Structures are given as structure tokens and as C-alpha cells.
Image (cartoon, rainbow, N blue to C red; front, side):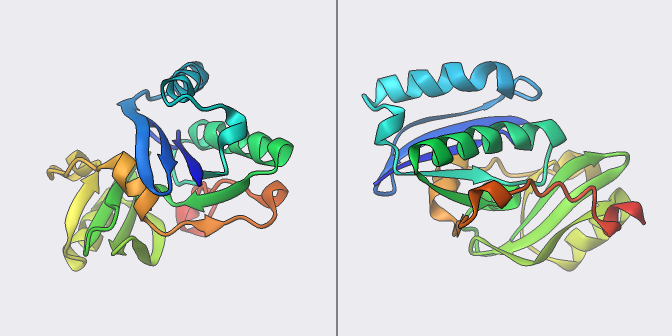
Length: 197
């Protein structure tokens, strides 16, 4: 099975092509606010390097958020068009899963702007509880209450973060199959009541 993984939800552009769970080739680079300019160039080059076409892809896995309002929609739109037009399977993972991977105990913090942060605690690739958006002060308290390796924007709180293994994490964490591709919407979180508090 050939899997295409794509993430444009936050600061990175992550693209990977996998065969039966083994990485054939991929990229993971910082491209904040430039993903839309570079994704097709990088994706076409990636397919060419592994001698595959879009028709060879069996399933697509993307991040559904949280992250940048525009960023999340880039990979999601491409995936929805590809999967509906070419009858491919579509799967989603959280941006938080992409950062934490299969770490036994991990915390992810991502900048949500306005002195706020997206935070989540994960264990073995699964989010424990839910991803939420908190003030930086509350985010610090959250991290203190949930011991684990820190990923993401630890510098927001003056903390060091471990660099994620994006391409490895993408294919290892449990993904959710999307049965109704047309109904899939980004997980922005900012629209939730937690953001309005």
C-alpha cells in the first residue's frame, strides 16, 4: 500500500511517501506561510524521485489541526480533491500527534498567538483528554501537571523542546479514517468556547 502523508498545519511542510509503512522518501522543512507556494513543487519532485504518480497512491494521511487557519486548509484541500477525484482513502491525525509521535508520555505546545497556546498531553500516540487552547500562564500550569517530553514551542514559556521526528511519527501514530470526505473540516480550536474565555 502506498501512503502519501502531508502536513501544512503549522510552521512545517511535511511530505512523505510510504510503502507498507516504510518511508520511501520525504521532506520536513520549515515553510511557515509558504506552504502553498512550495507544496506542489516539492510533492511532484518527491513522486518523481520514487518513480510514482498520483494514481499509484492508495491513501492520503493529513493533519487536521490545530494550527494556522490557512495552513490547515492547504493539505486538507489537496487531499480532499485527490481522494474524491481518484477514489483514494483519506485519514487524519492531529497536529499534536505529529509532534509527539509514539512517545510514552509527551506534551505539545504550539503558539496560538495573542499570548495563548494550543496544548495537549499524549501517551503512546494518543491524546489524553483533549487538545485545548490556554493562556500562557495556564499552559505552564498544564505542563507542570502533566510530566512528559516537551515538543513544539517550548520557548513561549522559556522551556526547551525536543525536535519531532515528523516523517517517522506520521506513519506510526494511529490515524482516523474519514468516511465522509466532503464533511471533513479543519480542527481550528479557536472557534471553540475555550478560546472565548
